[in-house]
Amino acid sequence: MNLWQEYKRPASVSEALHALTSASGSVMPIAGGTDLLLDLKQGRHAPIHTLIDLTFIPEMTLLELRGDELFIGAAVPVNRVALDPLTGAHAQALTEACNLIAGPQVRNTATLGGNVAHALPAADGTIALTALEAQAEVAGISGTRRMAFTSLFLGPGKSALNKNEELIVGFYIPIKQALKVSETLRVSSCFKRIMRPQGVALPILNCAVWLERAGDIVNDIHIAVGPGAATPFRATEAEDALRGQSFNEEIFNRALAFLLAQAQFRTSARRASADYRKHIVGGLFKDVLDTAWKRAA
Image (cartoon, rainbow, N blue to C red; front, side, top):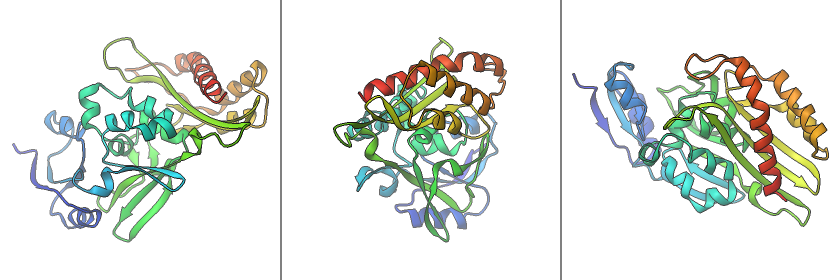
């Protein structure tokens, strides 16, 4: 049985949207396809009438500076995100996250847009983009708009996008996080995760931190933990506890207490229990925060 009936390769976002909205039968955009094709072959996804390949759309394969932002097209392969000097200079947490997604073969094919489109609350790229306070560019039949990154998600595996009418074009990341803003104000980011020690493993927990340091003061900070809720989780109460404070053990413990109170860790039969995640998140959070703090020294 054929897994799809028609395969289209639009050369522009507008062509892709026309193909998406005019297809007869079920339709699905595809870029890397590392999850979709496996699901189709193993019967976890119903056969699709039309596949729309987004990898021939120049706008969606760009990775470039645009003013004071870094733009990453949704169809850019994960490995290119991990290796590009621009990402390393301006979004180190994302570089580290992309280097941990699956194995080298998958990273050469899988895309950052696909990692986000699955709407999983602990996807590595998603957690890094959450901490970096990214914005998404979304194209639909009514035009193109920017939206806050976290507004893309409704729940585990549930995207806020209308998949029959909308596409993620790419992501915008403020680039100040890697620049020396002044002699005393510096910024950095970090991503790490805990996973089972075998082969290519999914995360038990992951964490990303972006911070702005003024001497010994945490001037500003973003903290993302996955899975800390049904959607990508920002530990806003822990951020408030750290912001404007001198970074020391007492302040960290206060922030950790706020994180534990705000997060909604869940039990996963394949990964870990909620109690275990609560037990180990402190060590992961401290490690990521310490690394980001030292990088901004």
